[in-house]
Image 1 (cartoon, rainbow, N blue to C red):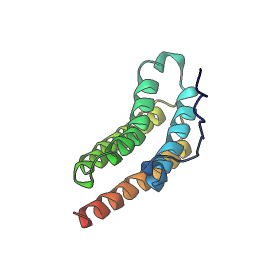
Image 2 (tube, helix red, strand yellow):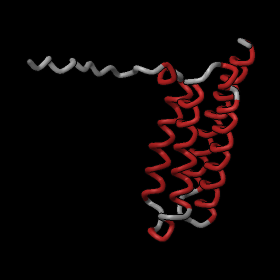
Image 3 (cartoon, rainbow, N blue to C red):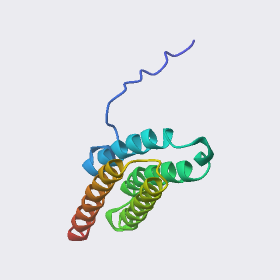
Image 4 (tube, rainbow, N blue to C red):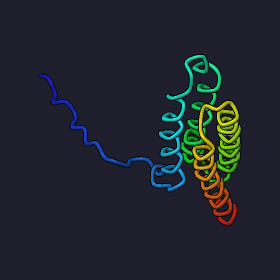
Length: 131
């Protein structure tokens, strides 16, 4: 006799890190970065575009990975995310200098990245206060 298949209930947010505003902002930036890189020349597909996408993804991935650890272990992951944000700044700057994106697009990205780095610093401060 076959037992019935388990009922799967999909929930919007299941994991604790998904509740973090900094994580949500990092996902928004991934969308923004992918939108920008989609418009870069095809010859940048394996260079600048790839690096920009990987750096943008890394911010979200490190927040998620770190949130699965204890608060003490989580301390190193925000620093990795900050490094990835700085990589995104460089990618945006190079994209602007090469004429792939406008000065305005670069400024918008920099503002989004600055907001994320401030939020990550706030998260780190919170984690330190709970040690």
